[in-house]
Amino acid sequence: MSSRSPARVRHLLVAVRGGGHSIPGFSTCDDGIVIDLSRMRGATVDAERRTAVCAGGALLSELDDAAQSVGLVCPVGVVSHTGVAGLTLGGGMGRLQRKFGLTLDNLRAVELVTADGGIVRVSAEENPDLFRGVRGAGSNFGIAVSFEYALHPLGHPVTHGTVVHPIERAGELAQLFVQMAETGPDELWLGFYIRLALPVESFPPGIGSRPVAAVSVLHCGQPREAERDLARLRAFGPPVAGSIEPKPHLATQRLGDEAAAWGHRFYMKSAFLHSLPEELVDQAAGHAHGIPQGAEGEFGFWAAGRAIAQVPEDATAFTGRTAAYWMGAEINWDDPMLDGPCREWARVGMADVGRFAAQGRYVNDVAESHRDARSIYGEGKYERLIGLKRAWDPDNVFRLNQNIRP
Image (cartoon, rainbow, N blue to C red; front, side, top):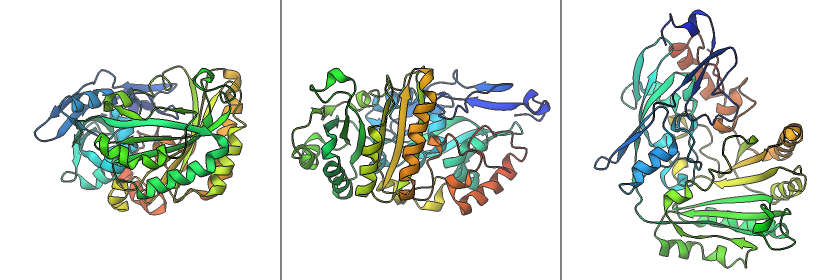
């Protein structure tokens, strides 16, 4: 961005919009300039080199489709209309993370338009210090206009789905979730949820709209391997609802699109955990009874570790590699009158379980702590990021984010 650009001359706020999925709303602004990358779309794949190149405004669906057309995959998020830019620069959690790592762990290079209007290529060989910083705090240093990713073979169906059990079995199901996360293969991702049984018509009488406990899985190995590794979950007992079966990877990537469609109101808070104690599960189950009527809320726990933990903590700005689980309190609704009660439900719920949290935050989830990014990265990393910010954006042109103050 040239020093003579309208934004810099007039000291205007700058928002950068890729996919537009920013939870805090950083992809737009009032009384400023929105740099919209939505016309910079597309993903191309080199099957021989197992790499993909995406434009700055590309969506996950474009990367998924291009990679799967030649039997390859990049680990990305779980809503296909998410932008690759925001997801990657903040981390990139998803259902392939235990096998292939975070999205940013598969980033080979990125091209940035910097605050002075220059274009730089950033990789392990070119500007390596900046490459470390953009992987986890990338929105602070420039506008990403191109990404290069490493890809992995995945040419067969995955085994994916969810089993739902009565809330009374939440503790037992949580224990099984932990056991399977600890002893299962890297190919097995699991999520444990406490939520309302909605929509009502999808559940037996007496279950709909009540709190329930659920486990979701995605096994990216061969189906016969998945059946072996999921035997304990199937033996847990007949669920009140269940959907685990082989399916195309691309089908799993679109299952959350409708729930995350534009127009809904949404709020969340999250944390990393080293363990999943019984007391935390009990507290989450108790809070599920207080979800405001007319809203859909849940406490979710994702198994982490494995490939994520294989990357040294200091290799990237992302903080949380030693965590065993990610935990989020998420809620969505449509009635504006529920804005206060729904936000309060998530805030109170996370405050009550906050003492179990490990150091660090997943930056893409942080909606309210952007005034003090130290809580996201920790003191040591934050001080190094300040040095990078002073070198690449000393005037803090790119400040509409979880901001590193120069």
